[in-house]
Image (cartoon, rainbow, N blue to C red):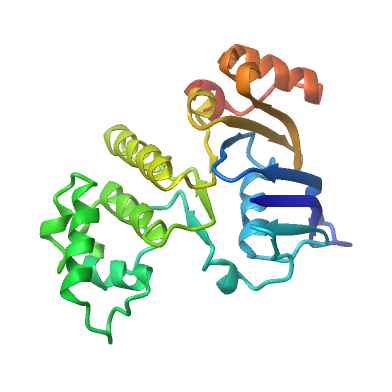
Amino acid sequence: MLTISNISKTFNPGTVNEKQALTGLSLHLERGDFVTIIGSNGAGKSTLFNAISGSFLTDSGSILLAGRDITFQPEYRRAKRIGRLFQDPLRGTAPGMTIEENLALAAGSGGWFSRVSRAEKTRFRDRLALLDMGLEDRMRQPVGLLSGGQRQALTLLMATMVPPKLLLLDEHTAALDPGAAEKVLGLTRDIVAEHKLTTMMITHNMQQALSLGNRTLMMDSGRIVLDVSGEERSGLTVSGLLERFKAGVGKGLDNDRILLSG
């Protein structure tokens, strides 16, 4: 489904601010893979997502999605096949528009200037009801009035209204309170399973990294330093994961946020 071959990216080359963000990174995901990704700040996790999404062009290498070369495609064209959620729940929705209008745009039904059919409204209500947040009865309410957890749940629904080829989750529950985070995480599991979505999820929670999905990656200095799945992953503990990281990189993981969450 996704094949990344030897991509590299350097920001501000030739200056005092030069930063090698990705270094010869290669990765292959099969259709339906759910991959969790963990690593310290600056390891290259979000940079990898930006490269896949087309936020910038890589300096070298190639990216193929569902057999199509998207290496030089602009971001807006990739967005038709890639869904993405960010850590900030304010991103991904239009706050001045209603819930119904946001869903209409996500579904390709129009929004402001196009009339939403009765069938589409029924579909939106049915999907919103799955969130169990009462939003199906507030479809005419502006999204800007929703809580962070409600907006993130709505963004998840919007990103998968038309099932994407690839779903990227960039610490999408990190900014939520524990109750809302657990709710959105449960919705994520259900929606990914329902549509059999190929998914990549960045998390700072090491237990989540081992319990969600079918494969775990660890990154450091713009490289994938650990890739575990199957029986190897099922028998791995958080302490074992830390030891594997140390053995592969030659140093311990020094991110307090990750260590405390583990």
